[in-house]
Each structure stands twice: as C-alpha cells, then as structure tokens.
Length: 90
Image (cartoon, rainbow, N blue to C red; front, side):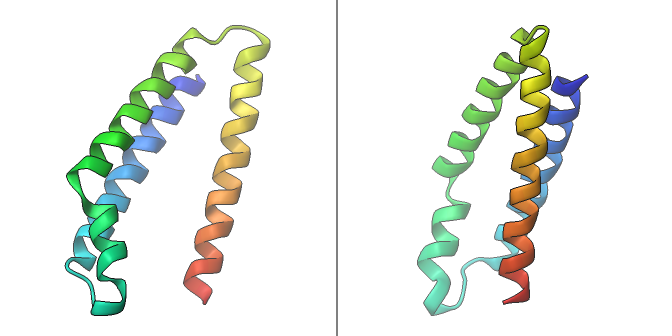
C-alpha cells in the first residue's frame, strides 16, 4: 500500500512544485539565481532519478521494512509541511 501512495503523492507534489517554480521564472533579481536553480532541467532529472530509486526500494520492502518506510514517509511529510508553513508565514 505504501508504494502506490508514496508514488502518487510524490508525483503530485513534484508536479505542483514544478508548476509553482515555473510560475516564478525568471524571478526578481534578488531571487533569480535561486529560481533558476530549482527550475533547471538537470534538477528535474535529478528529482526524477530519486523518485525512481525510492520506487524500487519501496517495491522491495517486506515485513518490518514496510512499516519503517511508512513511518519515515510520515515524518518526512510532517517536516516538509512544517518547513513550508514556516517559509510562507515569513
């Protein structure tokens, strides 16, 4: 169950994040380098490679590994949300 859930969330989140960054192009001068870095094709390729690697690992999980992967996913998303809440609120 975790692998399809994680894949679905990661693809949805990645698509949303890419669209958000694309909307920021080219970026105001103070942020231009930052926006350019996160919208580069090389970075998108890197994220896609990470996604493929995680997918392979999740599909290979059995027993206790599955529970540990689920726990890690919950913690990562918890901290990711906390980061963005902090970033957006200033």
